[in-house]
Image (tube, rainbow, N blue to C red):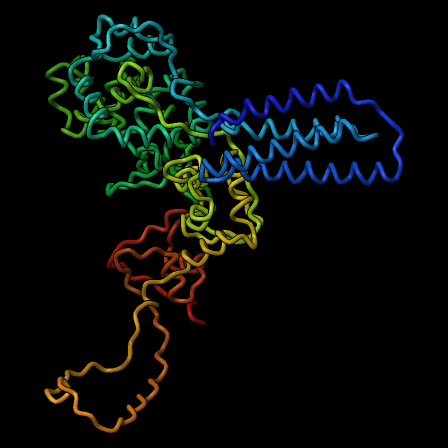
Length: 513
C-alpha cells in the first residue's frame, strides 16, 4: 500500500487539533445526544472504509477509497465542532487508530531500499570486487571482523559473480525467507560470537531458507543437518513425532554450536569449519592434522576435499559478503514485512488454503513460504482444527481477518480449490467399442433405447495403496477415506514432512471403515 496518503491524513490531524482547541463544552440535551450518536456512527463508518482501502489489492481503488474516507472524517470533524456537547477527544481517538493503520510498512518492520542493511557503509568509491587489501575499509565493525576471518580471493569473487547472475533469484529468495525467520535464528549466532552474515551464507547455500527442504542423503531443515550430527547437537524427534531439524530456532542454535566446536578444533578457520559442515568433520580434521594446520586454500589441503566442498566454501563466503554490503553490487533487497504475530484459526483450514485466501497483497509471491517456515510442525496440506494458533506476520493478520474467516467469499473459494480432485473430472460412460462403417454415415432410423449397463458389485475396500507421482499423504488420505494421523501412524511416518515416495506401498489399515 502506498504511503502517499499519509500527508492527507496529517492534514486531517491538523484540522482535528484545531477543532479540539476551539470546541466549547455544552450541556447535552436528548436531541444533542442523538446528533452526537449519528456523528460517531459516521466516523466509525469512515474508519472502516479507510481500513478496507488500506487492504485493497488495486492501488488506484485503495487511493480512491481512503481519500473518500478522509473526506468523510473531515466532514464529521466540522460537524462535531458545531454540535453542542460533541467531544473532540473521541474523534481524536479514532484518528490515532487511523494514523497507525496508514503506515503498515513502518509498523510491520518493512524494509526500504537501503533501510536495515546489516552494515552501514558510507562514501564507497570502488564499485569493483574489492581485493583482500581494501576489503576491510569497506565494512563496518561486523564486516571487518568477518573479513579478518576469511580470505577474499578469486574463488570467492567467482562465487559472488554466480550469486549475482544465474543464482540471483535464489539469493533474493534466501534473503526474503531469512527475514521472516531472522528473529528466530540470528540470536544463536550472536550468543556464540559468530557473524550473522555467516548464518545467512550457510542458509542461502544449504536450503535457500526453505525449512522443509531435504536432500537424498537425509539432511533436512533450513541448516540441512544429517540425523547423526543433528542428534549430537540436540536435534531430532522431540517425542511428539516432530523432527526439530526442521525448526529454524533449534537448527540455528545447533549450527552455531557446531561451528564454534569446529573452529576451536581447526584453529579458528571459517573455511575449514565450513568444509567440515559440508564434507564431514572427520575428513576435515584428518586433513588439518596431516597438513600441519595449513589453510583451506593451500594446494595440498584444497586438493583433498571433494568437488562439492570446493564449491560450497567460497559460495557460502560469497553470500555472506553480499549480505554485509549489498550496495556495492547494486543489490536492493526485497521489501519484507516481518514483524512477528499470531492468529487463532476461526475455522478448520490448511496452510495451502490460507495461502490462497490471504492472497499476495504486500508480497510479490504471497505468503506460503512464510507460513510454512514459521510453522514447521505442520505439513502444507495438513488439516488444522479451529482454535489452532499459527505464527504469522503482522501484515498477514488483517488479511486473514478480511478474507479467511467464516462466510468470506475468498475463504470458500480457497476451500473449494484445495478440495478439488483431478480424478473426479474423469467420467466413465461404459465399455469402449469401435464404430462400424454403417455408423460413420448415419442412416435415418427409429431411435433404439440404449441398454442400461448392469450396476457393478461394490468392490472390496483396498488394504494397501501404491504411491503415485504427485501424491501427498493428505491427498491419499482424502481419496481413501483415511484419517491422516492414523494413516501416518500405521505407516510410521513422521510429521511434518510425512515423507513418501513413488512406488512405496502404504497400509490402509483403518481406512474406509
